[in-house]
Length: 417
Image 1 (cartoon, rainbow, N blue to C red):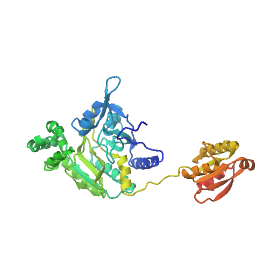
Image 2: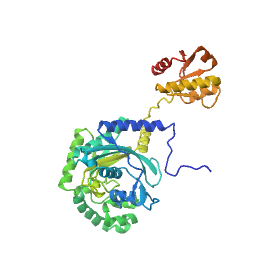
Image 3: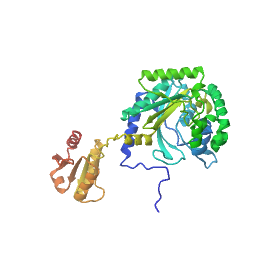
Image 4: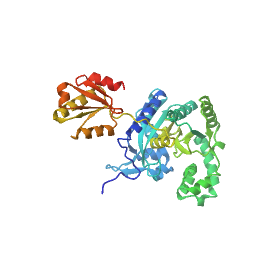
């Protein structure tokens, strides 16, 4: 029986790769406009990074991480998200000594052991933005604007921005006590995971996917009633900046996000009732994993979810021309000459191909049609002897006689289409 890809993973096939290249190119260009530079971090990290950074009481750490011992008996984890590795790199390489804020972006695979469903895989890919070094609410607004701009550039306009303020450690302690008081009467009705969260991090109960826990949490106190003056002022400034940008928003006091490192601002972008992007501020993360206190803010955007959103909004990604010209051949001399011409055209930037299957001329033309080549040309003994051949435009069959040694002329015809 043939070996298949593991459950929750998906192959990217050659005929679909143009979609990924399109969205990655567009996202890179948007990140560049916002003065962000790319960072690439390892696929796996020491497990401690995620336990300390993401939080031991989160679903990600408790249930979803791919963790194993390497040959040195060290615990390592395939990264389940991109922020903690970026923060680790910020500390390790002394980026805090550079001009701040440091703005970075990344494309990365992430790994989470979870139920496989539409738009959710065990290996998926994220585009992320991280900004380190600024406490200003203007950065929060800029990061949100970058995400909103990205969706609009793809033609997705029916977006809803939900924002919340989940406070800082000072006001969070008061809120946690309020949650404990609330959940104490319903403690026995909580799932086992939430029972363990009750003492260590009751706010995580609000993020539980268990139906009964979600039902119980609906009447729980909201964080906005407990935030300190500093957090409240930051939130008001964020709203003001969003209004300056003309970005409509909805304050949703029930957004807490699934990772423990968030402080103050959290946000989600919704399209057709599906969260397509989420992020926020995480001022304590750098210190939590061993660095000096450094404010930060960012977001993650799932690329598979983005592609699915484009499909659901009937937005078609333009399919690029795969081949400019197929240089076919008749006879052994023609095969050698077509091979030579195809490679000479490639050196001039033309996407060219030739026959490598010893097919008949008819079969070669079928192949040229199948791969959607813009032009074709057949080279045989007669063409070699006369030094010329017919360049055929595949969409309408129009033919132009060209000299085999006039590569620039062939390039000009192809380029002028």
